[in-house]
Length: 342
Image (cartoon, rainbow, N blue to C red):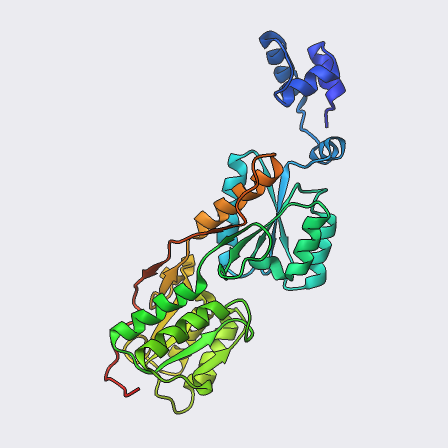
């Protein structure tokens, strides 16, 4: 690989001039600039980003911390974050914690502030807030994206959406169709990240005077298999549900397949509604009715907030709440065959 000194020799200038041309700084004449660029191209010069980061004390990369890269939502989110970073001439380093807190802590310790200038965390990246706040206190800029509880700011800059409102929209759709026995599958531990979505579901049932008992609820992993197993458990025996609220699309796809395996027709015998609107939601059969959250907007805002912290601009607001939530009606919901008493 060619070095700056070799490029300088080819262009008959000093290494400092080469550096200034390649980084777009300093006063360099147009003829000299063109000669340096031609020499760099001829020599096949490629900048050593790691060396530059060590010399300048900053990196051209931003770290994105995810909890589970196999969840289809996160690659979609990553794509939008990548596009936003590239528009600002930054690279995105994706770190998958795989729900392991120690792994996430290692990324914070080793990547934040060295291999990357700052860290964007999607859904807390499997870490607790104390770990993120400690990293920020040590000088690593941190922004949280997809924060689901705008009523409880995390104490770090964040991009949020009202998950409770999303739960209400989904459940109101089922009630408006005439459903009265609506079960719930929540893809997080009790009191976990999807708690707000479940609270919205309960708000609507309470307002409509519909009953909700522990037997109407299952908590599961946020995965296809988690939704599949929870639905098999709820639907295999005697039940009177005409609809299910599922807190996330990926387990909802598992619910659709569990219903098919049990011979339950969706939506004729069972309606299913969810939240997020990942790409697979429109590709399932039947296609999934879901509440779309603004993934692209949140990813872009998260990158912009992080760069505000890094570029010496005025600090971003403590929290930006994205208001746009919309119901996407597809084939997995329909009125019940017959009304069921509350």
